[in-house]
Length: 357
Image (cartoon, rainbow, N blue to C red; front, side):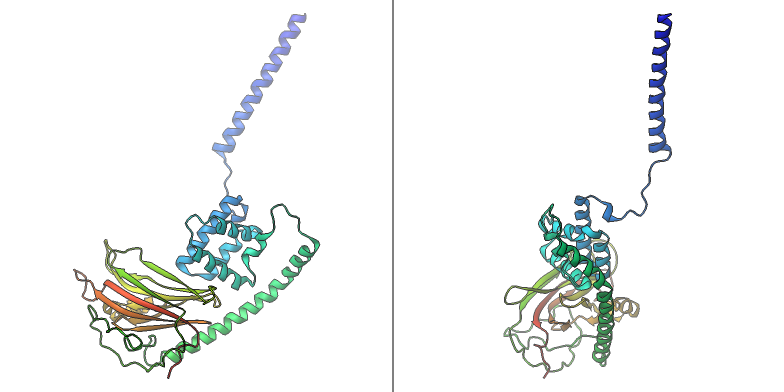
């Protein structure tokens, strides 16, 4: 009798163990194969800290390439309350992200939010917020709607000023102020190696009231398919003021190397919410109505010619970009359609230094 009871008990436990194993296998099969969990529209705020820092690096790189302040703010805010810490994490471990790109991103977020993004991350790890800190956070939440309304009003006023300035400066032609080549230089003007564009009469310019904050020179050569030069503008005390540069704006034809038909000349000011851009175009691209109209969305179109002076102006900075030398490429494409070489000199001053006579 005892043997029978022992046998039944062992069978009971065997069936229970078998049922448990089968149940686990069926559960795993259903959860991982038949109906696995699918994440949809997950927020970056749900990522762990290393991945949030990677997200912030990509947001900074994107802003450095596209200069879209609205998208930069949207991607920064997508990280949620951890955004400031993630931004500080990028500053501590850039992993290829340029220091200037981090400064520019930090500056534009500061302007759009009305506060410094990195401040929140300065609290020591594990420290508990004080009652004063909690009170300040509560007050800041109340201030956000007011700041948002003020920012919107500022954007509307800035847009109106930009529109008025453009309407005023486009009276003779939709281009930048043109100065005579080499007026402030002691060297001989550069030869017109590829440009056959006629020189236009320039409005007289009074000499600058002071030396430029910085002078840069950038050279493009055919085959430099990743050409995108940028330069940091700093005050005499070493404070970051903004950035200027030249990059590829448009191409013609197909194949390698890229045939560049237009360049973007731009100026970023940390005290201004928009980046000013003008488009320097080859004669073929400039004379093509559809191409000129399409590139006008990026900035004022300007026909390349030796000695051409492009003037960019923001809230607190102004830059003169002078075409020192250029040459068109030769090949199966239309004549004077793409550049083989281009040299541009950029000089930056505080706004108001370059007064017209």
